[in-house]
Image 1 (cartoon, rainbow, N blue to C red):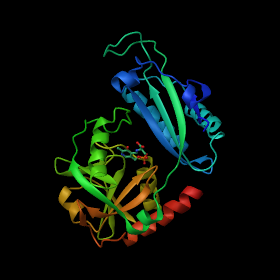
Image 2: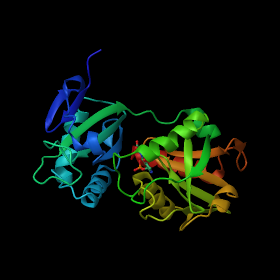
Image 3: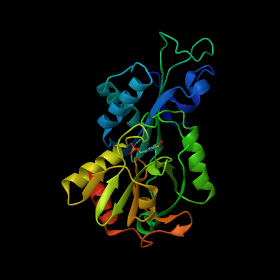
Amino acid sequence: MTSPIAHFNGELLALDRISISPLDRGFIFGDGVYEVIPVYEGVMLRAREHFERLQRSMDEIRLANPHSVERWVALAQELLAHHPGNQSLYIQVTRGAPAKRDHVMPQGLSPTVFMMCQPLVTPPREAIESGVACITAEDFRWTKCHIKSTSLLGNVLARQMSADAGATETILIRDGFLTEASSSNVFVVKDGVVAATPRDNLILMGITYDLLVRLAADGAVKLDVRRVAESELRAADEIWLSSSTKEVLAVTTIDGRPFGAGVPGPLFREVYAVYQKRKRA
Ligand code: PDD
């Protein structure tokens, strides 16, 4: 099989021709940020919003962005020309490769820029129609979860807990309140009102979350952005997950027990249908 084309520091190269210094701060410190953009039939969904979030992540870690949003979009489109169909576009920028390992941020270093595509695997019909299983765990990550950092060990450990339990996600609780899941945002529905956790430093401000909030605001869905206690999570009528690759999914099993009605709820079905229409628009 030929190696897929990827973007590396301004060039399009076969993935197996790209090599990165072991001193790269992305490798040594996880000192970098990333984005994942869903691509439907060659068209990125909310590209500008993703590259604007990349800018915010870079500002937070004091890394100068080598490209404007417009340039990023153009570079992404050049790569996508080699990857037709539905794709998950991955973008990573690290602080670059200095001459020696030192925690202090080196000055004047060129960042390492990498982009690749993988076929977008959206959830199977079974997951949409029957819902998915999740477990819950204490949120043991740091308090800068709004940065889309490549330092993902906390998220990896959390996700593995659900993988070990045969579940789709690990929903995280910090000090008795819902934050998010290991790689998605979480919504909770009670009595027809959708609650979404606030966009603070304890969650990643999901681009899908933002889209769902907008769709809810345009439609009949009542939405409340506020902290959600663990007890409310457990007593909810519906729980949803959202992310660029999961789109929106209903949770029907929590910690090994059937949750709610045991099937995706009516508001989920409504918001799922609106999302599908919006992504094709
Ligand atoms: N993850 N929260 C976390 C911790 C995430 O990692 C993600 C996405 C989200 C949802 O964000 P968005 O709607 O912008 O995809 C929330 C991506 C898909 C990943 O790391 O692969």
